[in-house]
Amino acid sequence: MSIPPINQTRLEHESVHFSCVKEDLESTVQWYKDGVPLDDLPILNGRFNVSLEGSLDIYDAGLNDNGFYLCRIMSAKGTFSAGAFLNVQYKAKIVYSPAEVFLAFGKPGTLDCHFHSNPPLTKIRWEKDGFLFDTYNVPGVYHKLNGSLYFNRVGKEHSGKYTCTPFNDLGTEGPSTPMDLIVQHPPKLIVVPKVLYFRKLGDNITMPCEAENVDNKSPAIVWQKADGKSLFDPRVTVAGGNLTLTGVKSEDRGVYRCVASNIAATISAETELIVEESLFHQKNFGLHINSTKKNIVAYWKRPYSFCTVWSRDTSLKLSNWNATATSSDGKAILWNLNASKEYEIMVSCREEISGESLFSKSILIHPKVAESDQLSLQELNKSTGPVTDSFDIRVERSGGNYNVSWTFTDNSRKDQADVERYQVKWYDAFDGKELGTASTEANKRHIVVELAGGKTYVIRVTATTVDGQQITSIVGSRLFQTPAAAVAATTSSSPPFVTAAKYYYMALFGLLVTGFVVLCCNCYSKSG
Image (cartoon, one colour):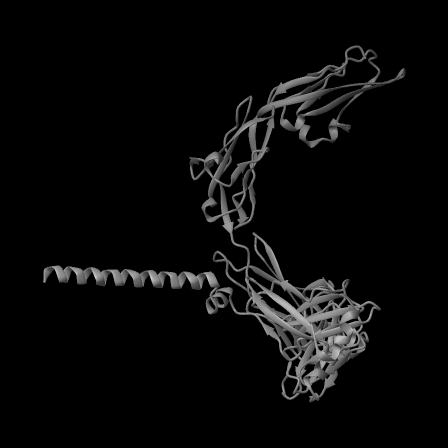
């Protein structure tokens, strides 16, 4: 090879010449672009020519012609190769402009300007509805490094027709076609299915799901099964967003998902179908119930982290299963059940992998009448250790908090000397959920806690003795309820300084009235 090719920089639409002069006329020359023979590149079809000496000419160079060109000479003496780069420069140009761009209301969004530029972009000009759109004058809108518009929080005021014009050192090919930015509200479900449905074999079921019309458009609603199984079945119909299954079978059980979507976003709601025929073929949770006059407490083994207690009133002919309590510690206090009624109770725990609920066998509990409230307390705390009526517990309001104090009863004062520490726990009386805990030393039998207004609590005090035994007391039948609002509590009993101020102003007002009367009397005497 007597003359190898050298790097070339050309403007768009110009011609390009790469030298590659062979010494032996019998040798053959093959040109490649980025490793591909030129004959195999449609973009160069009809726009290049290889001379007899081996040089390459490219006509009407374009932006896609950029790359590495290699000349390979093959002869009896061997194979020789040499290459060079082609750099085609052009004005910044728009390559694509969508007619419509949808952005979600209230969320971040980006409006892109699709362009090519060589040399690199120097600036970009945006217009909205025919006027310059300067991001420095529009709060919450910024220019990204690639020229796109970034909206920190998309609002209705951002809708309109946008154009972008890119520039580089060679200029611009002109603006984009108008892009209509449409602000789309995400879908909103106005009717959702229940969390759980119970059906028997052969029953029919309809699970409702409806989305609100957003911006005069109805979001698309589809139903999916969480395990990926197909819902294409003659027994399955979807009408107006509602899913109907006829002739329920055992394999229909599982988690279903209603998915509503539009261009802005996708949302979903889940429900689970339980086929009662399969309930009693699940895990054995060792469920047992303690029922007293005041409380119903469910206990079970804890193979999973989150479980739900279900109940239904057997005195009603048509009684649905209701979620009564949730727990993660194998115990739930069913505060909202009437202990004087008969209930059927079972526990479900959800598998983490499949998402399906595994149910225990149901237990029928009969109304019981406890001998006293003290029996109710002992049943409620059966799982915590020996229980005695050891404390008198008082709860008093103290400023914005509550002071919990306790004293030993006469029957248990002998245990007082053995106490090493106290622990106070408070629970939501509705679902039994532990809300807080605190501990004190043995010489301190009071503690200040924060309790939300308008709620009912169960408060438990535990004394741990030196030998490790525990003495536990609960505010049994006397639940503590905080006032509905702090204002109501403060107005019912004013602080001392407020009361003193009130009497001070009353006395001052009395003195003013007395002085006015005396002044009037003096004036009357002089005039007489």
